[in-house]
Image (cartoon, rainbow, N blue to C red; front, side, top):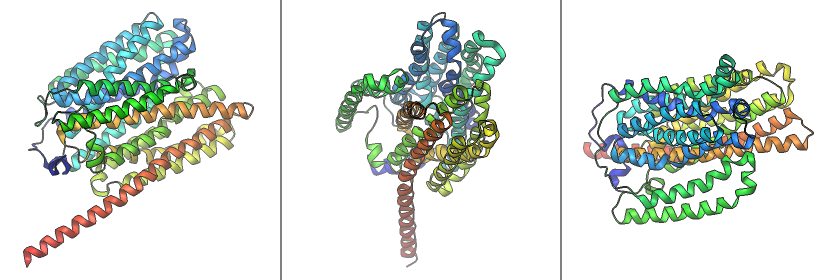
Length: 498
């Protein structure tokens, strides 16, 4: 990577603000909200699907895990295709496919058809996701980019936390049988409107400096490696970790081969599916990927722990369970939008503050869950979850902004896809480990649900603390680099005066 590649992206190309950029952003955020909502919204409807389609718990689990698997599988190749052929084109095709597969899932007459539709829906969602971050890179610069990523971070937080609420509401309104189908059908009218608006508002063409050279071998190696790592995790609830543990070894070997191949592609002057030099030569990218991955291990797993405890342990309805975690979503959405406005000024310090606050909020929540009478729990945990949400909002959007800050716009799709892929790995790991720990403690304590939930939530805090341990050194490096830059500018200024 040349010195030009290491400069902030805003200095690398001729940038003229698109007057429609904020309206275009709103359309991409709606599409992003739908795809991320479909990760969590389905979980509350699994019993209804099982009864309606007459299948087993293991069969219906593929409705969740199949979507997560294909979603994570295609992120990096999808980002590269957007870089090569234009983000608008890939976005429109993927959104149309997402609408179609949502309708297929809602109308599925059998579990086999539903799982097939969800696999295809995950592919469509995976193609959409990296175009969102790449379009923000393309459409915005400077402080505006931070604000745009702040809104994106708010969307991530809201979609993740409100999925169970929306699912519970739809099942409550439309009943057990039609309710789970409505979860998929609701995407159709929203998606069609977003598709029409996206065709009008998204910028045409592709970034300068990109080529249509596609690294087929690298794409296949990454796909095999991703499947090998993700499959045991997404099948953890049905014994995937014990049955498929050997796939982790296969995945590690294939990903190592992928890295070697990508370096070979670069040495030959071709365009890799993912330029591994992003991790070694782009300021902040490796640290941001690590922070996001480790944070998502705890962040993604807590929602399943809450659902298990509230619905199975306390007998709450899906709606009651979902509403109980809304304070986190409200806090995260508000602070993410604020953090987007502050990130250009405070940088990685925002992430450090956010991780500290979310750790404190989750630790307090774990203590309350483990010690309080369940009858008072609904109201007692609201302030603690709100505090955790405030911290969470200061993590996701600033981390995305800082991770992609110095990435050249021509590589924004692949870089964003790489970041989101590792976050999917973290989410899959957290979603497997924390519920598994919940059940282990439950069995060891004679079905003591409060203790099991408290321990699992307490362990989730380790994810935030692990991310904090990565973020602090990166913040200190940034401070030293900024001081060195200021000293150099002052030196040049004195030299000019002399």
